[in-house]
Image (cartoon, rainbow, N blue to C red; front, side, top):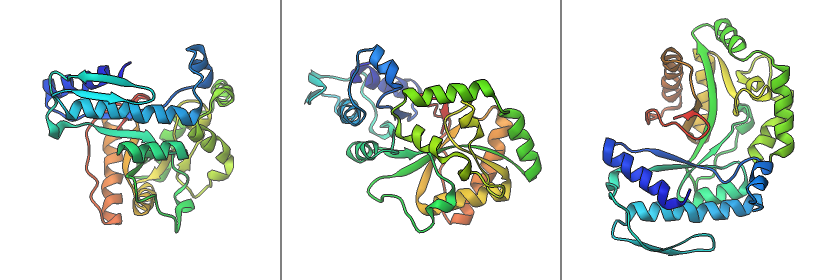
Length: 276
């Protein structure tokens, strides 16, 4: 849709509910789907287009008297936003930071760069780019008891040969950097003593890594991510309120262990069914 349509939705929701929302800005999709729409724009150029797209949205929401913008991809002339959006309801913005182009876009539009994390021990001695706010997308299954957590995990995400074939087919038509990075990790990313789990991703049941284990073990792993500099977390959507409670326990433990306070941003559903 045109960026004006997005800005109009944001302003209308803010006007109706008096709540801030979050926008997950996506540069594209599967390559064959884009080609079916006659969109042959290369991967990195799609992020150039996304920068302009987001800039128009932000200017419309910040300038109720009218916006004129002329870029390579978008042009508007004295376009006005009604109803205007209160400045304190200006939307938060997420964008993928897995590729260089995505990271550059996040910096250009002032977005939080979201990545799909590697196991925490791979970040030892390595911090995030301080020029941009950083976060991760991850699923969590946790219980007080380690064995119970893994029992729940295996029941929710059993091995699925059909899903594995779908994952392999998706890899062939995707030019997504994060998709390739996770797929290339393979079995070596998963160790017996690690909560890091890729089975749901490899069985095409979800699109992010999972952390599975006891409260203390998962909290320890999260605290390591926080210490690196990841302070925004987009959760794979929990199946029920009880599961969200378990997740809240480990985030509370992790933030205390890392010496920071992570603010909850409520239920903000993203394009892929994520919940913040």
